[in-house]
Length: 135
Image (cartoon, rainbow, N blue to C red):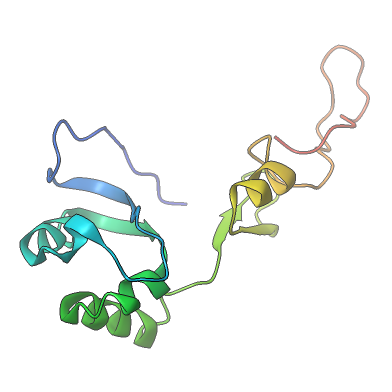
């Protein structure tokens, strides 16, 4: 497994190893606010050294009729990089992938940071198998 050293960017637009982007606009009218500004979007899309996760509503971006976002979404779709949910992989059970779309999905399926499978670890104080969900 490849590990990345992450540090918080000290200001908007700084380059970093891994970028997590929250595209905060979600509405049926395609109102995307500052995301419509091409130079801002260009900065956003060019700051990741190794990887970027964008979380947002592709339907809102498409409804905006922004040529730039339409091109970005088309490129991502052709590359198989658009997904209807965020896949979370448990570090203790790497074969287990939990897909979340909403806050409630996260709270009900991965609340403790792991997955819904039993932990399986031996408890140090008694030697029994941990009965809780994975964390």
